[in-house]
Length: 455
Image (cartoon, rainbow, N blue to C red; front, side, top):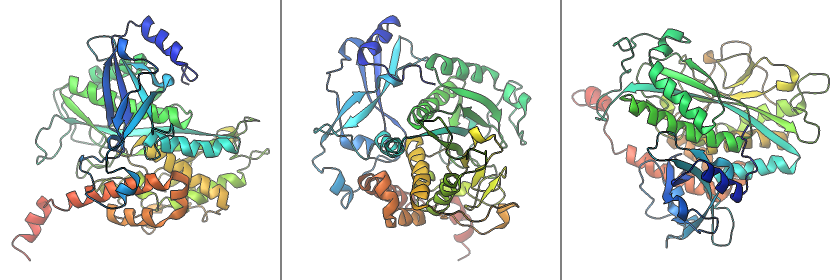
């Protein structure tokens, strides 16, 4: 749990003074999950500082290219208004790799009338959590984040390769759950755990996943906003640690052909704040109506929300049959072939795992979207399909197969847009259309190999 959950700004200043911090990284997560912002000297970091950034800073995609016209500018001012940034004291953490004592603080974005900017990712997650709060409920999540370690690669035309470990060799075979394979990178992970400890990140277990050089880190369950912050900060941490060991860490959904993709599985439950009871379980320990309705909501709305869970053209390469990634929205108990899994757990810990989300998804957006799907299921009392007790890979594809298809579904669904905010869905989908158009200008090696002389 975050020990600074109720920090005031004066307590934040005391925290900074105790650690003799000389610089502050003022961070804002953008649509991609990239850290934007400014670096301030400690003496300039004041509660009434009035720090500002252009509103497009949180409303651009991975290429940095913006739409030239269209609905995007019905939400974003064409005159490029300022956002007013306010620090969230609960997010302050030391930057453990900085040479001088440096802190990082995540900020929320407001307009000049003092309202949260609706398309900022952190605002979207706050909006969804407030729906639960108004019902007297508290959503609880626990992400499991996969990523690859790869050899340093500075040429985008060259395929990625596993890095060289302590033995002087690269992995050439799959080493799922191998302790020795993790130990190959002991110096790196010692840094990662030391950094996480200094940053007070609630990381739990580290395991070697199926792919060569593929790892997974699990987080303890907590409130969605705090855990989205932790995933956001953890990605920065792992990338920095990897660079210091002459390798890259990547959260691409499918970085290496022939290897499994990387996911961000999210376990979800909902607690009644008055009683502390998990609403997914009845008093007698059996699964509740809300449990099944939440699953029904995921089944109905995951395809619509796919552009939020799988935000890039690369994301859809991960979602292939028999590759440890779901292809449909079947649900089952203790079944890893389905998109929606219910792990075996006592009634108090009954939860639902969304296995569709990619590691490349923005954690704020992904958590907001999966909680929105479940929320709509409860509100609309959506009954799920019968439980899948066999191999879901033998079933039909039920998910969009491309970013273009996913964006069409996102634009057409009014219920999900109402929960997440229409302004956000407009900005997000318009930015993704620009990225998709940029990708379509690229001619791939496959096209040159198979089409050049044969068509």
